[in-house]
Length: 457
Ligand code: BES
Ligand code: ZN
Image 1 (cartoon, rainbow, N blue to C red):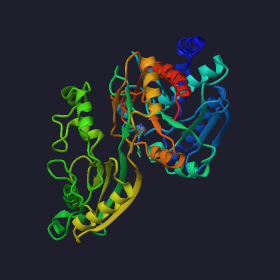
Image 2 (image 1 turned 90 degrees about the horizontal axis):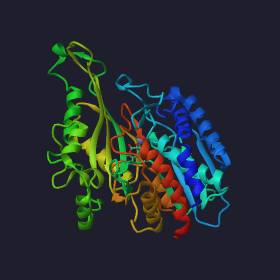
Image 3 (image 1 turned 180 degrees about the vertical axis):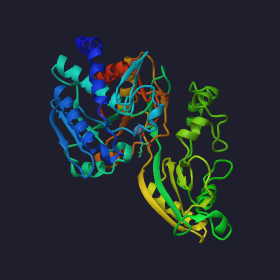
Image 4 (image 1 turned 120 degrees about the vertical axis):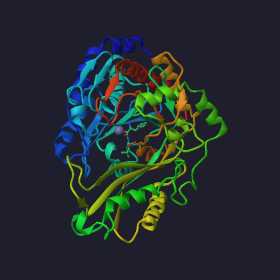
């Protein structure tokens, strides 16, 4: 690579931080309707940034939801990569637990604190700065690049699928690059070759037309809060196994080789447990913690709501109870098939004493790629150059629903070029970005484009 590209990156750090702080100041919370204007503002800011770094054909595409931002540079006799990321962020509540305001990015030691710092503005920004360094210093990119940044990843990408179907030719590429995941550990860079999928639901139970005095009516009717607890207790056995009939039918088992590789990773279970503040770990019998979170499906309750939860006491039988539940899925489970199995089972285990409504929310397919894919290997070399350490291979428990669409519709493999760390509080208070990774990530991304130029499908 031209040496001045690297110099440019190394001498631009302060400017990078100032720009990223501006980006993080826009409260682009996709889930909350009151932020619709901020979403548009953030899309415009993103588009302006794509223009500023030298991309062409930049546009903000409207969707029925939040806009999609696109830009490209297509003048190389080389493969085409599609860089995908998301400029939307999660809500900030409970905001009182933040040490500094979530939309005033603040540096403490070597970390930058703000909502979106790692998920995903900071990580996607590393690519933009690598692109900029090439275009400003070399006047060209080693490969053709398309950049597509959406504003609805955190709400399940409801409109990106259609956009990809409608623009298949314009989005044609040889490989998709995504930096929206953590590396294995601080100081242990990694390439992630698998993600879990997701199937998300809301369960509503109604017992009576209104709340009731629990003295006058208690004993005569079913209590929906209690019924909900009973229904949920039917979902998993004590060994952490999901009890929905057929749930495991399509699960691809871990290979012996994978189990060996996972065991070799520098994972300290005690540190992990302490780090998340759990008195004791719990999961499916017969599997290690990494196997449980990366390669086994689960059922989780994401939220519960019923009855009186204020201060003091109130003798009442609530009329309704609600739960948000979701299942993380692994290859080759299909979210639609799992949705049917789940709905049938909930109907079966819910007594006739309450009215039941199950609402399907978003879902996404699980994903896996081949480690020996030449683009994956190009990424491994780039990571090694940027971080001076050979990456390890991991899977992850989180989901990026659109990767399955990239594979199916664009027929392109995805490389997960994760620049985050597992302790960065994604989706939680005090989200942060480890700055050495941010700077190492910009260098790695700059190398990545060079390495891809040398790799062929
Ligand atoms: N950055 C995450 C995806 C991720 C998390 C990958 C952890 C690997 C490890 C992404 O922004 C995210 O949070 N995705 C959602 C998708 C959902 C809303 C459909 C998720 O996994 O919950
Ligand atoms: Zn996220």
